[in-house]
Image 1 (cartoon, rainbow, N blue to C red):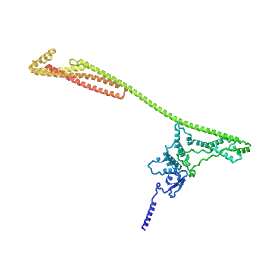
Image 2: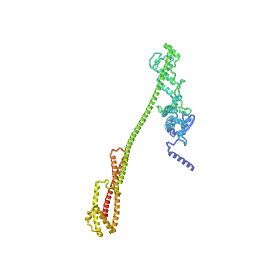
Image 3: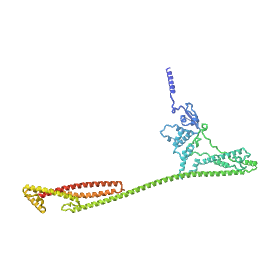
Image 4: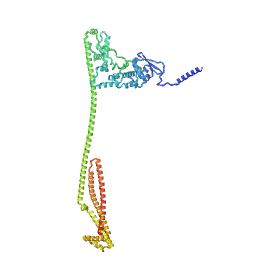
Length: 610
C-alpha cells in the first residue's frame, strides 16, 4: 500500500509539473517531419522549415501546432544528394572549421538553388556571399540567369568583355551563354501574330480537305484567288518557324549548364525568374514549370491532291504559283532575318561605340585634369622661382652694401693708423703736441687755468719768502721785488737762493727732491692722459662716422630681408653705445688733465720758490 501510494503521488507530481511548465517558442521541438526523396527517407525537425520559408507552410501545409503525427513530404524536384547537402547546411555538425570552408563551390551552388526554389531569403543571401569570387565567367552567367542574380550575370559579362584580345569568345561559349536561343526567342516573340495567322490558316485547310478555303479569308484582308496572303504574315510565320526549329524540326533546347560534369543539376523548374503564387494565392500543383513544346505545328504544307482539288474547284489546277509564293515568302523572311541581324549588329556596335566614347571622354577628362594640375604646379614653380630671384637680388644688394661698409671700415682703420703714425712723428722729447686739433674754446680754458695757476704760484711764493725769513739764513726780500722780476734775473736769483738754501738747511734739499719726484710723476700721468685723450677723440670721430652711415642706410627705402634690417639696427645701437661711452671717457680724461695741470703748476711754483 505505501508503494502504490508513493507511485500515485509521483505520477500526480509529474502531471502537475507538465501542466505548469511552458514550452519555449524557439527551442522546443515537439515533432519532426519526414521527407521522401528518390526513395530515401529523411527525418528532421520541422521548425527550421517553418521559420525559414513560407513554401513548406503554404504548399505542404506544414504547421507547428503540437500535432504528434509526422507528415511525409514527397520532394520530386531535388535529388537525394542535393537534399542531403541542404540538410548539412541547415543542421550543421559541430566543427572548428568556418562555415565557408565546410562546403565546396558546387555544394554552395546546390544550397543556393534550393534556397531560391524553396524561398529561404536569408540562406540565399548567405550562399551568394560565399559564392562571390569563386565562380568562373560562364559559371557566373549560368548561375546568375538560372537563379535570378543579376550581379553575377553582369560580373560574368564584364569578365568576358575584359578578356585580352587573344582570348576571343568561342562558339561553344557563345552557345552556352545562349545567344542563338535568345535570338530565336526574340524572333518568335516579334512574329507571334504572323505565326498565329499561319497556324489558323493551316487548321482551316486541314478542316476543309476539299480546298474551298481561299487566301482572301486569311488575315481579314481582301485579295484575288491564288494570291499570297496580304502583309507579311506568310513570310514572317515561315521565318519564325525556321528560326525556332532545330535541325530535326524541333525547337532548340536551352543551353546546358556550364561544366555539367562538375556543376550539380539545379532543381527542375529553376528558370530565369523566381516562382510566385498564382492569382488564387496558392502554389502551383507541380514543382516543375511547363516545358516548351517538343515541336511546333507544320506550317503551310500543301499536298499535290489538295492543289489538284483546289484547281478543280477554282478552274485552275496549277499548284506551282502557291509553291512559288511560299518560296518567295521564305526568301523574304530570310532577308528580313538578315536585316534584323544587321540591325542587332548595328545596335551592338553603336552600344560599343557609345561605351568607347564614354570611356574616351573619361580618359580625355582625366588627361585634361592632369594637364591642368601640371600647369598649376608649373605656375607655382615659376612664382617660387621669381620670388627666389627677387630675394637673391636683394641679398646681392645687401651683400654689396656690406662689402662697401667693410671697405670703408678698412679705410677708416688705415686713416687711424696714419694719424697714429703722424702723432708719433710729432712727439718731441717724449712730449706730444698738446694743442693739436684743439679748438679755440679749449685754448681759452687752458689760458684761464694757467692764470689761476700763476696766481696760486704767487701766493705760494709769498709763503715761501716768509718761510725763508723764518729760517734766518736769507736776507729780507720784499714780495713786490720777487713778483716784479722777470726773465734771466728771476732764474738766477732762484738758483742762488736755492743754492743758499741747500747750503743753509739740508731739509730744503730734501724738499726739493721730493717735489721734483712728484712733479715727474704728475708729468708722466699727464702725458698718459694726453695720449688717451687723443685716442678717445679719434674713436669718437670714427664712431660718429659709422653711426651716421648706418642711420643713412636705415633711412633709405628698405627692400632687404627682415634679418638684415634687424642686423643693421643692432649695429646702430652698438655704435651709439660705443660713441656715448667714448664721450663719457673723454670727459673724464679732460677732467683728469685739468687736475694734473693744476697740480703740475703748483709743484713747479713751489720748486721755483725753493
